[in-house]
Image (cartoon, one colour):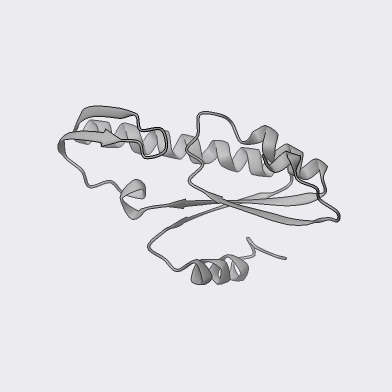
Length: 127
């Protein structure tokens, strides 16, 4: 857990994740702030997670939990997913900003170095 680590001096902690967990990130991020860390939450999604192009009947297997779910993907379901993604992203952003940090979102199809440089140029990453 992030909050259990030893932090000898102030700095920036970059957490790269999709942040798709059942638990809120708010308490872990607040713990970083208490340890004098500036949190940067970097949400990294696959292009299909950002702009899904699925349609029809699917059987989904969640890799980390091995949970299986069968569903029929319709335009309405894609719209609901995109609304939930926007809400989820807003929650991650609130957690970051509530702890004095920032949130960055990008796609896994872009190079990590390119994204880091883009974030620095845009002023999102400043250390």
